[in-house]
Image 1 (tube, one colour):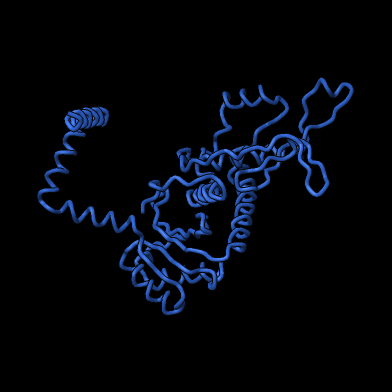
Image 2 (spheres, rainbow, N blue to C red):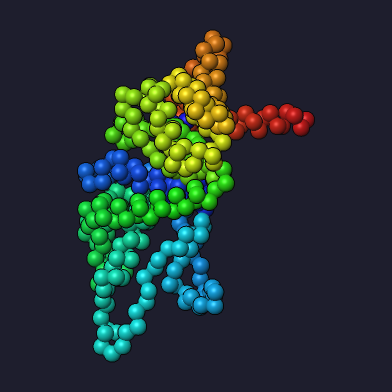
Length: 311
């Protein structure tokens, strides 16, 4: 499995999963080092609940809170009641600014946008047109205080989901961050996938004892009695770590990643001379004709085949 080639995940708790993934990568790449190329994952916007609702007999006014697809309550700035001359002036107090900053920061993290998104005269002018009295958070504030607070909230939500799950699948894969450093991530299936933790193994990425210790720490954290299955890729160091895991936790079944197995199988298939020639011709066709022309050629070929079959 390769970072960036992930499977499209349905909304729900997965929004939190991807949000945490982005937040972790902000940590791993440095939160204020000037790197504006932080295009990571796509997270669907939370769905708002409009209208008035009653919970336990207490009415909740519309616009006071919105709810994500996973049921997580998202605060929205409350409308102020103003009277007199104050109606002619736009003001933002500290509490309202904190809430708006939080929402802007969360939107930025969820889309993997650069920390300098709100810098520059054009963005400032657009925001001033929407709310003249509001000043957006600085790059440093987005990359430090707001990021720390959002990280704690997402981790608290993740821990809560893990605690409520009756059983778990632990998945691990190797990634590379934007600095080129190797990363081993840990995802739990509840059964929906939830990003839990990542470590930078450095030179220990081929060390089975080190990998076993990382797995052991995660297993102990989520509860060994809950983990029934572990899925990893098929690297030699990980296969050796399997033996150590099963020796300590006999009830846990460890398997290799199916997509990684297919990837290795395809590599072996294309070592055969006949398939090598087909692959070389396909690459040459793509190089000379371009992707659009190749797609058009394939569509025409399929249309001719259908016509012949109908005759």
